[in-house]
Length: 479
Ligand SMILES: Cc1cc2nc3c(=O)[nH]c(=O)nc-3n(C[C@H](O)[C@H](O)[C@H](O)COP(=O)(O)OP(=O)(O)OC[C@H]3O[C@@H](n4cnc5c(N)ncnc54)[C@H](O)[C@@H]3O)c2cc1C
Ligand code: SF4
Image 1 (cartoon, rainbow, N blue to C red):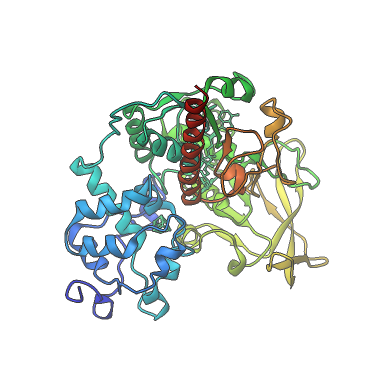
Image 2 (cartoon, rainbow, N blue to C red; image 1 turned 90 degrees about the horizontal axis):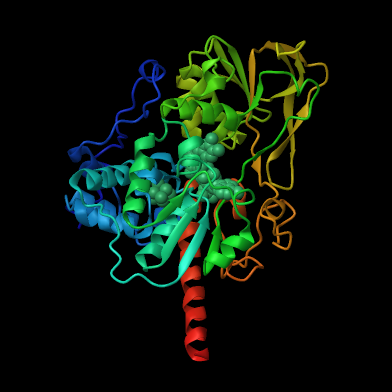
């Protein structure tokens, strides 16, 4: 093993080439190129094969990272892919957009010893892209279809992962989604420069070819109720994500040209997919030639500022009330944004939106950090008489998302939710208080990550299968 591995002492860390900021600002293509074969092998061989692999512990899917790195270093890519896909339904997606600095790579032992982490995400992407190219990824062939069916509400990563796992076990699956395309936030939230859409479309096509039925433009609460779905299917999974945008409750909040982040990102993603988008085509949701101000410091804010710069905005400023160290967004994405020319105004909070009918400026208050609050983060406090004005033709609010009122929307007022509106589940069984109804992903956790949605979808599949087996056993006994 030592021959092929443990090369971190002699081989330095290298990520796949990143396109220059000037070039990438001109298009929406992904920022990172792919590894070439030799580089992937070489970089994988840096892994120290630790006894307790902290990368694996800190990957929400507990991917068997050291083993697939070793197989890659040995050139056994098909085996590496088999292993990678055994714990992850979308390794090529996670390889691209997991915040690895907070998960696997941030806990790599050689990173901790100052040698620079193994570039785990890039290798995961490389292995899976190779598998697609070589035709190793095939639709599921169900030998004997079971007579039980599962209805899944939501075609985001949680719903898709659950569907795939249950289909492998032979269940009939129908996914209902209110959008016209499957993929959830992978399609309409996350921009192309992080995740090109063909990557998602290729996956959902494979699931369709596996016999999973998709009913798009179908909204539970409008086209059907939860009760109706329960009567058609033997079990139901709610995987609807969280979509209610948080507002900025300040003077001028109702002025024109102040938009929630998802309106802005969805319009841009739809344009990228070739759709006609009236509000983009007439300039309303297009940042071109505008002074754009984005409020927020998470991943969604980073996606908005980087989208605006690609739309050729006159200026793009990001207002965040804490400092860089305390930003919730991935530090990699913040660095990418800075390279692309976004101006960050740390410790700055909007106090007032100014304008007659449309927003023309933002009054900003300077902030300082006080004592840590209950979340452990330092509380931002406004500094007296520090206000100044910032020119703005368009403001984008990226302050996070809350759940919609699912019990009301679904016509199931008896469905239990937490005080935040997320769906309550029994953590062991993933089941809600309604028998046969399960829930997974952001609608349970609150806004989170794709890798956690996949994990939840997989866990839900295990529990749904147990539940379906138990009801068919009961039926057999009763017969
Ligand atoms: C702008 C943005 C950028 C992000 N970037 C990253 C990133 O870089 N890395 C990362 O790991 N995570 C990122 N995330 C978070 C990640 O996208 C989510 O955590 C993940 O998509 C949650 O998956 P989900 O399946 O629970 O929900 P979603 O992906 O939200 O999917 C839910 C689906 O349910 C459907 N639906 C909702 N209500 C109904 C209904 N009533 N009837 C029928 N269908 C319904 C929706 O149409 C949607 O398709 C980002 C999020 C946003 C908003
Ligand atoms: S799924 Fe995410 S956290 Fe896990 S190994 Fe891949 S990139 Fe790292």
